[in-house]
Length: 227
Image (cartoon, rainbow, N blue to C red):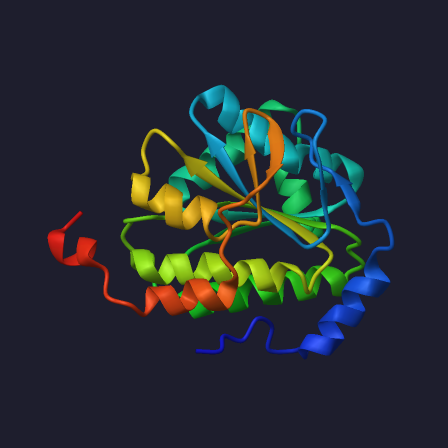
């Protein structure tokens, strides 16, 4: 199944946009002293409120540096992210009015979620964005969100989509709440790099998008067992 990332731009046009938007691909994350590359899709594993707030530092640094930022996730997490930003003195309303900060929630349609993110990124590039940062908190098992397999497929496709834009995408994973199955397949198998305890690591467990999507089409015994 092919999902449209951004209805207004073709893939080659998106690559050209990324090339023109940013020549320096080495990006400071605002998490410890760590850095990433444009096009990176990273899983951030956190266990405490302090680690959650440290992850939001990714957006704080970007907003202070003039980057365009997207908060994407379920309502509870989005409110937590906004609270951290306010605690650090950022004017949320002014940033949203200027278009430099966008708040997005999930829907039941994973394809629509990906297309919506692509449209938001395309709009930001059109406004002159040289770096786009997205911090995500997916609604695993929440009402109004896709089911588990659909979110896993979405995560895999984000890895490919991120490479088309001048962006860094970080997905936050709550180690204390999420199941082992989600952590293994969601955090580790769909993200080429991870962040844990403030350190970016290359992820040896990452599975290529095509192979991962193929595996999702196979029957999973755990589904019928209700695990």
